[in-house]
Image 1: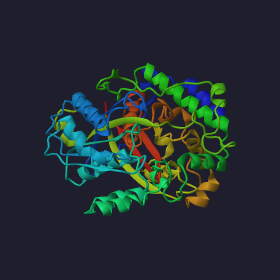
Image 2 (image 1 turned 45 degrees about the vertical axis):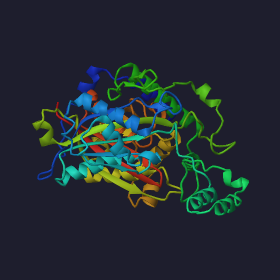
Image 3 (image 1 turned 135 degrees about the vertical axis):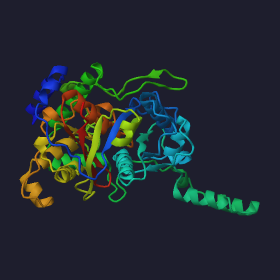
Image 4 (image 1 turned 60 degrees about the vertical axis):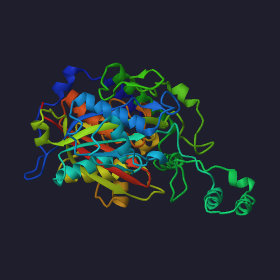
Length: 458
């Protein structure tokens, strides 16, 4: 596996001529009689920034607004031509709980356009997109904006439950004596705040701890994880320098500079990465800050339409959104194996095989999570024991996998990553001349998602 990673790093510089020569044999289309074709017209995102940096003084709807305005500017679609807006987020700002509506109003969309917010952990914007696809397929809408936002520079920090009870009771008191009596119940321990954590409610385990256990269960070494993380950062840097990350829009941060690129891409040597200590299971764990995705602020937005409507309005779609699935499994021992379970299911729905897929984009929560999924997909024993399959799924070939970097390097705003994955597949299919792409992602709760994307004829 290590040699595969190194070889793919050397061979993943994409030239224009290579892209158009690669795809010679046109495969069957996945269009179905009597079923609406749903297309991705455009996708944009703000630069993904390390939390606590340039976006630190904003609010989530500010980033959402920037992404939506960027989509409007790039497409030129009239603001009142959109039927519906769906946005995903995970850590909600209590002042803007329906961030989809607040971001849409801020971006200048008509106040007559309904908007709602969905939450499904790291696949929240995936859910936003498939919700849009469902509304179009059902004939409810023709033009929908979907997206997602995450703002981890400022998260809700609550008082302790006992403190909250007392504070709420004070509001109901009628006399000074009653208030004084409640205040007298306060204890020093009541002042300890409740900090949010990226942890499973059902198990109490942090995702990083789970990733470390998963890597150990599949025999993924520290070196394999560091090599994959180095690959992600190296490929992201190449893509950024080559201008391939076309979905990134410039954003003038109020009171700050114009931001035009992701700031978490930091290629490092294996020697530098080896110096880092385990972040979760100490002292013998293998998951570190260098081979994990970092806390990120960012937002994304995509324009999804029925093909008929898109063409009638003069748009040239980028891709078809085809079959998709959601999966769930044990959140304790299989928390991050969503791609392993979702990939074969979505391929079967589409009538495709792994060999038919030209572009793979998997969410990189942790390098250990990616490598564990690869090993699970290559295991007949795992397929037979846990998936009810006769043989292994087969892992994606590295020469087709996350060639422009991934969440480890580009960043992972929980609610926004799904749209980045889908837009990247569309752009890579255009650049590389492929026909089919596959997106897959894991999510908290032991859930997962996969979708097949088909290139739009050029």
